Image (tube, rainbow, N blue to C red):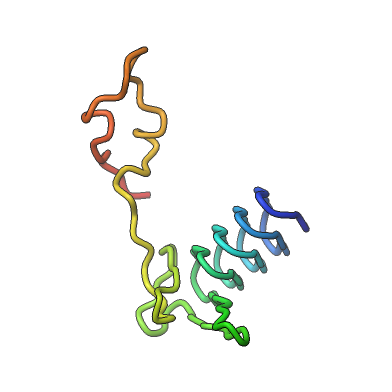
Length: 137
């Protein structure tokens, strides 16, 4: 599948998804995902994910994460593999300012409970924005 910016692509195993900036790509095992800046890529085991500046990559076992970085003169690829150098499957990763692969920080306010909080017709209270307990998968 091929799509432009601000797209959402979802596919099954052995898929090839390519999209522009600000996209969300999700696929099953043995998939190849490529997206531009500020995108979210998630795939299953034995997959290859390529994301540009500001992207978040989450993969399954035996997969490869490739972050494309622009230094003002050329692109470089930062490559991480699950099971090596502390990179774990089913964990979201980003690149920090020093081009290190780091686990994505989870915003405590970015939960389903705060997105769809039922607070009646009035404004949201502080309790509406409290971090929700997340159960393991």
